[in-house]
Length: 487
Image (cartoon, rainbow, N blue to C red):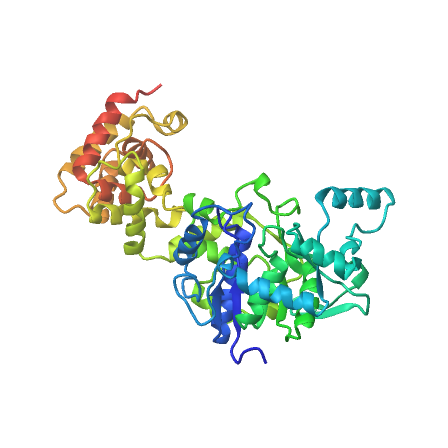
């Protein structure tokens, strides 16, 4: 048994941003660990130096912590199996590669790039079913191998795939999986720059870190037989595998940056709440088997199992993400939303305004059911932050009648007489003016909304009046009467 309690890992490459697919992998590993009482490990796979981005590791860790996956063993939170950054483990990989060479499961390959290119082109001309290395260097004499090595000739270390029975393993998501050995190439394990490839480093680290379950994307499924062969070559126990379904665009193509935003940072910058993003990503390939879409992180931990992960690709539907964002906004308290609004306020044109907490909370209360994003409060209800400077022409044409100016001025007089500003008192005043002037309430309500907001939609008109206050309401009424002309 590898370990008594489950140990899983998220092993991203520091290439600049956290992909939505990476977040899904991290989340499923995290949920599984928390559900089973296991440990979530963060390992940084930075051995591909061509793709390495300075500072990306720190940014990735910051995003994981912000999103809520901060309880990990790894960089900055060291456990017993470090270091957790692969570039700091090079000696370990070389020791294990040499072990494979000594027992015949790997060999040094001294072939030039020119020879490898010619080999590939020749095999393609022959229309072979698969382009593979021809094991040329495996069959060099011991004397030639020694001479090349001792002279410092550049080489890579390749896995020696021997003929034999199919490579078979069980996958929690996909059940029995098998590959013919003749379809597996002699994979490079150590590159000419001395850094390991993903395949060797992944297997060595998973074993030494006692990883019990390897939960990763479907794109790694075809690499798994190479990993199984490596485990067998070392004589190590296999972990349990679970390969997650692909993430797809609405047109069923693979989710890629060429077709839109795929970075977690992009969606956070657009105003999606981290709770909504976690909720949405959890449903990309998994369900709890119930008629429900709204989940908190704690609920996901309680319900998550690998057995309910789907095989089929999961479509990334941004409309559903936006719907979930609105649902999570509605689930928050006014005080929580107040904090979000105050964080966003400095980024708006209203940053120099003086808005007391009580004022903002009143605005939020009126708009809460209408917000898809916290920033909507500045866009959809801008009239809470500045008086209207123009009036929707379509609404003017529809709602501003011949008597609107006269009635609104009478309404302003009635509002002036109110000693205790409440929604009920504002409503009573409006009904009284309407009754005295023998008009329906709508002939006052609609022009009033237009006068104080400049538009024809929004929260209850008495909510707006109560929030901006009696005096500001009267000022806006008078300004509208001077500006809007009946035609």
